[in-house]
Image (cartoon, rainbow, N blue to C red):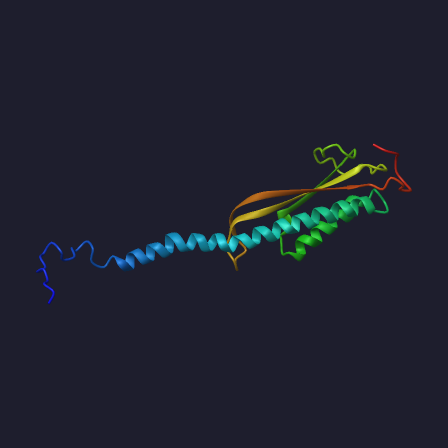
Length: 167
């Protein structure tokens, strides 16, 4: 036989402890689960836009160095970036592209545009995409944004049939 100790009033739950479980559950879900869910939902958007920017920079630089006419190289490259953004449902004002022409082996400078495409020069496409910090799925709104820039460099063919010689 097990002897039980008589319960006293000190062991009884106080009025401040009674009924706190539903409140703790609501606060736990609201303060812990909701922010984690928002971060989990925003991660795929960031990865998708970063991948889109990388591919757009590669395609823009390649289109610029392969253009038949150096005067229309920038327009065709910008059109490729716009098409890539549209394919990923990214607004046109969320993507920017600019170009710099420099010598091979030297770091790309600031965006100067495609003023000339001399043989053997390097063309760098700078693509900047806006990453929403807290996107809300299903809504076209986001709270805050971060700019993400990707650079890709391609070399102009040294045996090209037009343009100046060397940088």
